[in-house]
Length: 254
Image (cartoon, rainbow, N blue to C red):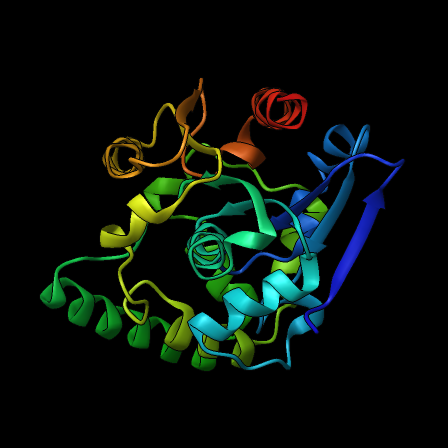
């Protein structure tokens, strides 16, 4: 079982939060109180991260493990967590009442691009193993896609505490290059879907709109968070929580 923590739960619905690469369940600290006010919130540590540091699972197996940890619920996934929640929703739709994907994609459809991405991820994995987690995380967060992000002290400390071996394995088996692309399966989704992107995250804004076009069987909305980049939930937690809470409340009431 993946490591998890539970907040709230006053008889309301359940939402499961699944973090991105280098993060842990601590990354959701800024939005958990707002979400937990009227629902149960389950936060999960992915393999190689946080309390699940010693767990080793492939992509499909990890998606299934997230479902076992969360049970039937609405699932919210960011980046890597979003790709896993999407896979869970396709493989086990009976567990997913609603799906919120934040800065996420269905993978790379072009085989050549996947091959190149696997090479890049392997290079990063070697770097993590050689320089250690703190130096790698600091380098990782200097990428242009995180230019709007100022991690909270608890988030940054938890990232730096991740074991380099765990993060390296996660890159190799959970990275975008290792993932089977899911573009052709988007039409299978039937549950309500919210695609959340930061205003400054042009790449994933385009991906979200392409995904919405492919989700022909589900009610889907694309939401843009003003003033945010790739990690919209960390950069604009109040605005992000308001958007996601409105979506979940509407789904639960309908």
